[in-house]
Length: 473
Image (cartoon, helix red, strand yellow):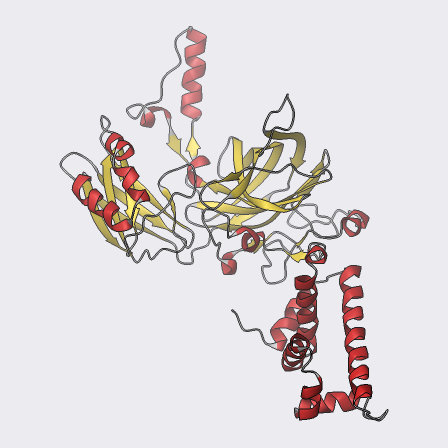
């Protein structure tokens, strides 16, 4: 829906060095076809050689010559494309012709390099929806000389011709102490027939979202679809070293997206700050001491959490180095007797240090601090353009469950494995109503009403909730 000027389009194409023989050939064929059709039309009308020249035809088009328009009535689509092309200019005409080719030839469109924004590619299936483009940092270095954070210049060619990529040579160029490849794929590694590329990131006040492209020499199996948005899932077992902490973080990260073709998976890996800010060094020390004494290992409970655990503060700027040890995915059908329905591949994909800068645009933390007589309440909520996170308060002997409704009474759905990390896509969160219920009562009775209609669900929450508050955001 955005309006682009000729200057905008020139700037876009000026940074996008699309080297693709398929596009070039098809554009030449299309333009030649247009020229031939013009000549044939003029011949049928008995025009002179001079009138059949390209300059005469262009003059007719510019002047809106009635005869020329009438002669083209047999092909309305062609006329529409021509009018648009002349109206937008030469640069835009190339884009329009390319789009027309893709629409008419879906198989050809699959071979055209995609100017990377994986966030935009998978937003329809990603549980949290749209990631703000203006706050996205591309992890592609256009000329392999500028810093990774040159947002306006950087882009990534996803799904590019593999022959072009293979021919690119590597050279060590120092960018803030890091080595890079000449083709500019800084965060890219290949092993065991799999190429993994980190394409972009967005960091809010709650999490980091990485765009990830996974390309396989062998075709991927058909992955099972997940959740309400029918996304496909690949999990990466990672080791992550953050500059603000002493120890490494490890575990499986979900990469949620979809197959772009049989060999290319595009998805988003979300890293919640709560998964990287826990400092368990005191607990590890207590475990070592218990083992030396032959005692049972200490248990971490709500009562002992502060005794054994601390939290790192996640700064506004920090660096992370990521290593991937394996990939796995859940498939629609059984692969073999050994793996069942699970796709597995091991390897060693290592990536250089990546500087992360949190975005401050449209993020806020609202302190609530309301608690009822039972010790149940809401401490605060965190909001970004992507999600809303609830921080509840409950006594140690009481298990509760919180629900948030938007201004229109629509339930905010969870976007991750944490039920309190809520997607705000398609919701009006100018006003948020939070209900906190008894956990068992919600799961056994109240939850079912959410499947009926918003008004009935809200009515039951009003009756059953132990705590309610309305937050104006």
